[in-house]
Every structure is written in C-alpha cells, then in structure tokens.
Image (tube, rainbow, N blue to C red; front, side, top):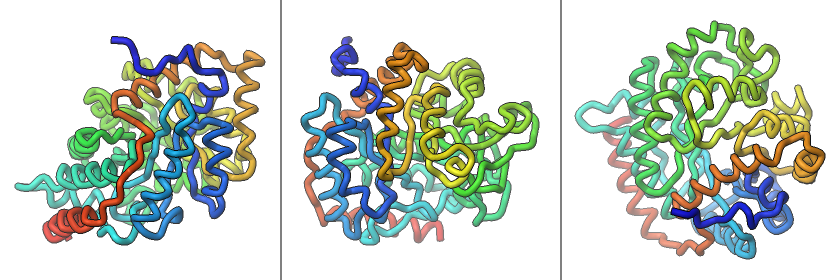
Length: 365
C-alpha cells in the first residue's frame, strides 16, 4: 500500500524541517511560531507547562500551531514530556498521576501502570498531542530525587521492561506515539544530563545485560522511538555522548537490535551539551550521528537549520541518509493519523479525567 505522504514532493529544506522538533521552553518562543513553522517548516513542537496557564490556553496554542502549519505539505507533530509525578506538563486544572515507581509498587491485583498509561493516552489524544516522551526505561539505582530516581519503575530489570511496555502500549492504544528514554540507560549514573554530560563507567557488557534490556524488549514490542541520552560511556564512546556517536547508534540500536524506528535526541541545548559543544555545533553533530529527529529548545538563533541544509548541499551529510529518516517520520505520522485539524475545547473532559486520576491516587498514594 503506497504511503499517504510522498517524500519525492518535498524539497531538501522541507525534509530537514521534518527532522526537527523545537521545544517552547523559553519565554518568547510562541511569538516566533510563524517563523519556525512557515519559514523553516519544522516537523514538530515540544510543549512545556510555561506555555499556558489553563487548559483553554493550551488548546488555543495547539490550534494556533496547527493553523500555522496548514499550508505545509506534512501535518505537524505536537509532542510533550508527560510522565506524571515530577515530570508533569499538563495545566494545573488536571490532577497529577503518581510517579512511575509508586505506580509499579502498587501494581498488584490492579495494574496501576497500565491504567495510568491509558489515562495519559486518553488525556493527550483528546488534547491534540501526538507524541509522548515516555516511558522511562531506566533502572532505579539511586535516591528518589536523583536525575532518574523515582521516575524509574523499579530496580529490577524485568519489572522495568514489563511496566514500560505496558505503559507504551497504553499510549499507542490512544494514537499517541511512545518514545522510550534514555538509551542506553540513565539509571547507570546519578549525574544529571540537564546540567553536565554524565559518565557511565561500567563495561558495555554490564549495560547490555542490564540497562539495555528494557530497550531491547521495547523494540521487540514495536516501540515508536528511542530517545538517546547525552551519556558518555567512557569505555565505548570516550568523551563523546551516545547521542552524538554515529558508531554507537549504528552498532547498538540499528544493528544489534535491528531497529528501524525513530532514533531521537534528548534536548540538544541542555546545559551540558551547550557548554561542551556550543548550542549550534551540538545540533550539527547530532545530524551527522544519524539521529532521525533532533530536539532542541528555541532561541533566537534558529538559523542553525539553514546550516544543516548547507551540510547536505555541500555533501557533508548524505541526502540518502536524510531520506531514510524522513521516511520513518512520515510513516509514523501516517500510522498515528497526525493531522492539523482544530481541537475542540471540552471542559467537562477535565472533570472526567480528574475522576480517573483520583481513583489511581487513592490506590497508590
């Protein structure tokens, strides 16, 4: 069956745009939506809680994004980091689901992880969101408030795999793409990749037998995307983080696990990456490392996109490789019915979801 979207009808600039998701985690980013969407034709937007105060404002923003994209050939992907617990991007009108470790602890007769995943999938789908950067497939090894800590389901590899896949499938059931994070396993270090480039000192064999297992099983269960962390595996990638290592991504994601889904970077403008590489050099290196989608927070130097296009024109980056990534992106947009249709505000929905969330909270907390 032929694909709905024809890559041959896209210009090089449009193809590069599809490979970019821009986060709106800056005060004035929404004022530049038209430039991002209509000039650079970016493939996706990542929402943050600071972008809206109410559910109505959130719906209005999403509809604004969709309206601006309507003249483009490919619908835009609205994405979010919605885990529950410490990582909650929904407006305060919504109650917050418990953190992953608490859900897993109480998943006895009632599978609270699956229920929480279905509530999240329903909430995001109704809101017009197509992609969730969840579940966390890292292993819990350190205190609750560490970078991963209680965001992980368990200290047990098998439980992380089981619960992560349940959550992933619950999101997919509601037409929300599931992006598992943070490969090859942020749980192997207590340093926080938001602020520095953490080192993983253990042998790759230990990672393969433990931290990589949940990702391997998620791939076997058709996860939509793998988010690669800014993690330095000292005995494998040296001083380079996994997210910038073409050799590591190719060897361990594409070849070892035979994965043909999306490979996505963590935010390329996190402090550690900026300090080590500079905000734009990191983005260029991420393209060269064969990531399919590059995620970075907006700032006024969005023209880095033009520099990526120039890399292809100068044949420093093969267009054939770009085409592979874009085909993966378009296939998922088609599979998950991504569209630019307006979202209707339904305030009664808040009450319905909150009732379901409260039932989970009563069981878990």
